[in-house]
Amino acid sequence: MSNSKDFYFPSQEIVDNATVKSYDDFYKKSIEDREGFWAQEAKQLEWYKPWDKLVDESNHPFYKWFVGAKTNIVHNAIDRHLKTANRNKLALIWEGEPGDLKTYSYHALNREVSEFANILKAMGVHKGDIVTIYMPQIPEQIFAMLACAKIGAAHSVVYGGFSHEALAERINDAKSRVVITADGGFRRGKATQLKSIVNKAMELSPTMEVCITVKRTGEEVYMENDRDYWYHDLKALPIASHKCETEQMDAEDMLFLLYTSGSTGKPKGLVHTHGGYSVYTSATHRMVFDIKPEDRWWCAADPGWITGHSYMVYGPLINGSTIFMYEGAPNHPYPDRWWRMIDKYGITVLYTSPTAIRGLMRYGESWVKRHDISSLRLLGSVGEPINPEAWRWYHDTIGNGKCPIMDTWWQTETGGFVITPLPITPLKPGSATKPFFGHEIGVVNEKGEDVAANDVGALVIKKPWPGMARTIMNDDDRYNETYWKKFEDKKYYHAGDSAKKDEDGYYWIIGRSDDVIKVSGYRLGTAEVESAMVSHPAVAESAAIALPHELKGSGIHVYAILREGREPSKELEKELLNHVAQAMGPIAKPEEVIFADSLPKTRSGKIMRRVLKARALGEDEGDLSTLDD
Ligand code: WT7
Image 1 (tube, helix red, strand yellow):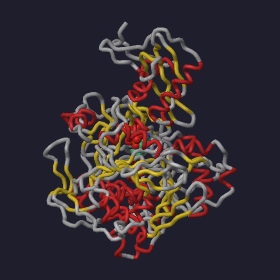
Image 2 (cartoon, protein in one colour):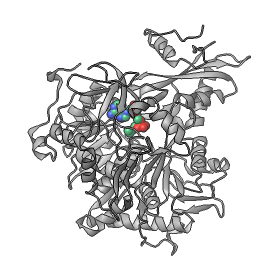
Image 3 (cartoon, helix red, strand yellow):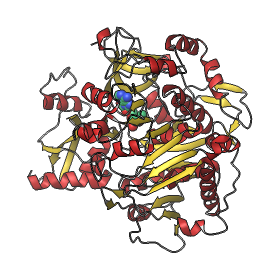
Image 4 (tube, rainbow, N blue to C red):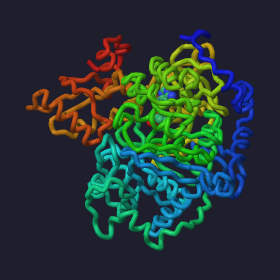
């Protein structure tokens, strides 16, 4: 798989400009003195009160970081900058899909966030409450997140593509009283619906009392007295003062909750905290992308996912970067939208997903060549393994052969990058390369022993790190069970990916080894898709598998056993596909329904999805000893 001729070496210019010039030495030190390394990183931030203990490992797997410290992520993301020249620097450049433009300096960001924070207070939001945010990609989405954090409330951002049922489930699990939304957003020239979906979710929620709606599209929406408030109306009231104290939080207080899919039906609300997450996101962002004051940073993710939380909002703002945000579709009105904006705003770093790259690649390079995108100095990729063809296109056509690609492996659970190159790292297309500082990674067998070079095994993280999720909301047992039980005696974190490490020590992520499917980089559970399927009256039983898809990476294929009296047909297939999209949101729409008479199961009744997958791909079905009948 690897030969030194396969390496892409960084240019002399990159090496000359790099802050970290030698990975090996720095890495070795960070492993030998892990606490010293994190303490040094933590000291780059301001704390209201320093920590008494860097990490408390006494209650595995419930680690605590910066114990005794007082902080608030907003202090480092905003307040601190107001005392320096950063005050006048652009914090946010935003372009709406119709072409409207807004910019905010750090000073203006502070004003917006403070006003929003005061509005939340006036609406009865208290420290410790969880506010649900369901918004399009508009500046107010970022303001809302920061406003919650500023007053010590936690946010739970739900991706705007989720259905009202999925939204209600998350609102109810978090027991949110207040939801922040918008009438809609713009996507492919049309206004999307958000408030109307929130209205439907509200009917399914016993906890929701107040909804704050930002006006974006101007479409008519239903509003109810004493429940619904327009944001601009509230902003015009004296309650919305632009002065607001930042709440002093314990380092371990919850900053946010973010739901992600696992191998059972119910989404997991992962908990991240103020202290450790501040240190981890800022250190990884700063070092991996070697952030410079003159950068214009574009993380083209949706804040509804962890990528948006860590690398669109928190990490970059803590580092005082200028962030760029775009509301809409990459190919609207033409497939050169992204390149046009990179040219216009002088973006220096683009961080996106393989699925987005593949999507833009298919339009060909002439769309790219119309624009001068030479301001780019680094590129990034996240969400799924990047196929070498897309990697080379990204590198050669977008990066003009001069921008190294930071292929960053991480998860909602890890809070930030775990396996990643630095700008100086010689790259191999498709490999996320090496562990970030402070991390020991393993590729292990069932017993937790490291396997030989180039053998496939389970990816584990051997030691705790500050950005790790602290638990699953309302479910400590599930947290322990999902991530720590498997290699309990070694205290390894079980990531759920299979991987291999080559003879150069480079990691190659193969994909999920559990029942999680990555569609266009979005994480979906087979169980969620299956439960959506069986909620249709025609379906008795269902199994979902992932098969390779040219653009999406993986596509969902579902098997259905129909109820008595129902016959397979093209119409029924279409109906079922739409039914799943309705129940979960459009991203979950399967590619096809395969009608079947039976499904392969173990004797204990578990569906053997890997057998279905092997059959669909015409591959060896592997060990069938547990197959029933
Ligand atoms: C899963 C986590 C991390 C932010 C976005 C996804 C896959 C993520 C890579 C990469 C290969 C990757 C893994 C991981 N993944 N980045 N660079 N190379 N695979 O977060 O939704 O929590 O998904 O995404 O399978 O376990 P997430």
